[in-house]
Amino acid sequence: MNKIEPLVIKLAETKLNEEGVKQLAEHYTAIDWLERVRKIQPNDSEFLIELAGRACYKSFGVGINPNVTKIRDNPKDYLTNVLEKGDGSILEHATVTFAFLNVSRVFTHEIVRHRAGTAMSQESLRYVRPRDISLWLPPDLEPASEKFSETVEEIEKRYHELESQFDWDKMTFEQKKRVTSALRRILPDGIATNLIWTANHRTIRWVIEMRTHPSAEVEIRMIFGKVAEICIRDYPLLYADFTAKQLADGTTQYIPKYSKV
Image (cartoon, rainbow, N blue to C red; front, side, top):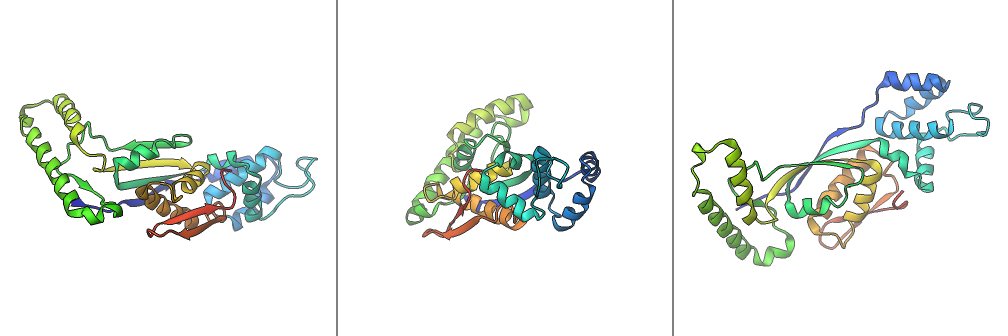
């Protein structure tokens, strides 16, 4: 049994097509606004969200919409107002993609419940035949770690005994896929897997709030604590209302001022 630690990597994020943004600004006669605000808001994700929100009301400046007599010039003031009012739909325009590595299938069974506003691609045990059982040991099992390891090693031994009943070198890929799929049924939910997860910022805020809560399972709290750290660092205006609270087990709960925008 190989003991591993879950790892979170940010892979991608929303990027603007600057020429398209310029064309949109020209349509709204808002080039002055674009040049002014872009200088103080270089973050593509946060800028896109503001752009989408202002398009709803033609609020790029006074006079474009006769009903608008004043606007919030500062991106921080604008996005804080969006969060405060709960106008969360515009947060769905920008996304982040994470790699969750060395996570368990316990974790992935939990994360699939957050399906709105997400895309997921998980390593397939229908195609991937594991060489060993790698997993993370939850802190609650530390007192029984030796017995736990023995149990996992026994499962691993039995798995390879079953695996050895087949002549893999003579099997077609389709046959290998079917047998690999059947063999995985004895593997534990704790076996390490990898997941690519893309979500929009409205969803990410909600999942951080839900999954760093003390009632959440410890592994998912650890992982979304890392997600929270990345988002607070990289999108400071969208996550400025989150405060960190250290929990007794060493994980961190992240609590937003504006819940479920």
